[in-house]
Image (cartoon, rainbow, N blue to C red):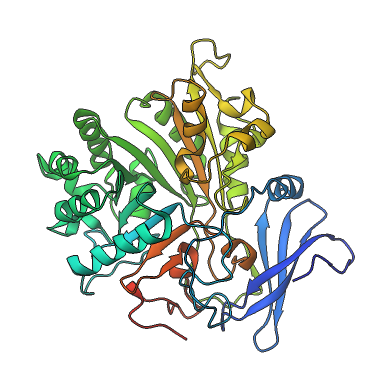
Length: 444
């Protein structure tokens, strides 16, 4: 791909990248441009299935600023040969440009909820991987990035496995210092002593789906109101002394108006809430329109700043360095009595230059701890601070293959491969996955 873009009326060319046809998933040359209102669009045409234009970002200047702040790329240690056009043949393949820093093990596809907005689309019925296969996936991570990285156990719902404690213990025995479970919290809230048992096995963090502070949000995202259950899980984590990260699927028109309230909730509970991960919901499945309007990280960033009551500016939220700058952004909010804001917190990015940030950045830091690691080394008290990250996942209509090749969030499979998160969960316009669970088969 080149950076030459043909100019046209009422648009400002920005750059050229690769995109997909949602129907056949062929990689196509795409032009990225800003319209008269400064909104960023990505346009491509499939010779067989026609044109598609995707809204990518609400503000062109902000988009280009983020894109310009890319960190040096640390290539993967071990790659497999390139065998197919992107996004097929992932493994991690030889064209991939960044190493994984957050790796997932999908321990089940079963779930005790049927959430309409869940990207995992867990419907049950698939056979869980064996302990031997899970051991192989731990070994894949160790071979790819070592045992000092972060491992997240996910699904489906990991707590549906009766041997989850054994899975956690295995990871610790293999030398992994950080193991987090991605959960809806139902079992943790319902079963006394369960969280204590997980912590005893070596669990170091809870990644809790937490989509809002009113029951109607959960009626839409989870099918029923389980807010009280979510709050109970947070109290359980506080009692046990384990940190929790609140994972928010941001859905336009549903909970995007609660971003400020969620931020304030995190600040008020920063003794146990270590971070908030805001994830604009993306869509997979049937698609036949000529223009797509997905919600982007840019929308979340600007709306979060607007609702923060002056605590945040969009330019306080910086790229996290470990992946493409348009994929992961974040800020760390430091608790300090001298802070000017009434909350008693200040954004760490307001007290450092971007050059200082880049110089102190460690390529070994996972997404959620980039700022925390830097501040800790500088002697800043971080235990009562709050990390806020925005994760810009992609689907077939929003996929930018330039970004995909810089993904640092990987899903491991028993065959020894580590696949970029967005390609692992990718579906075509008919809803068919490119990489079915644990890659037992594939489209190509």
